[in-house]
Image (cartoon, rainbow, N blue to C red; front, side, top):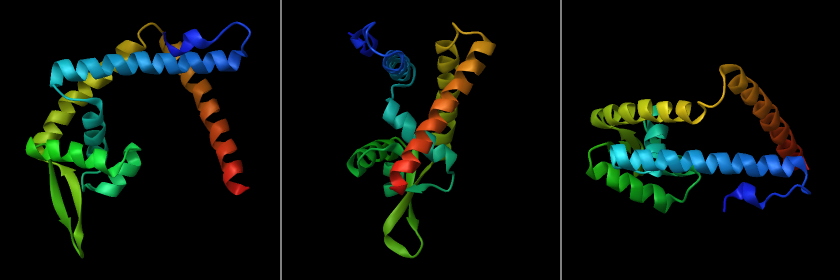
Length: 160
């Protein structure tokens, strides 16, 4: 049973919309996970870690990777160890801090990630293939309003 199946007609439309968003996210993520596994023999967490490093060519410290990926340091360490062993990322000492190091993509890692990212983009475009360009634009704008409203609510909570 998917998340949306939990919603009933008597529930508010907002709740039913939330459940539909969750269901769509889960279905798309399942497809992406399967494609990453099938085409690249990799996982979504490995892809996500490499994506963070691709956006930060100088590399990131482990605690920063953990924060950005919203996972524990142990998870990041395990993934990093695998990627280092495969020659896709490397650890680089941080000047002035003998205990810390940065993780960054190797040249091979950048090439591999570029191939995965191109395919990932195609999969996401395909996932929204049932919508017209105008519908995609409208949905994007509407979700932007939801995002801004939630950010405002979160800010109010932080200020109290």
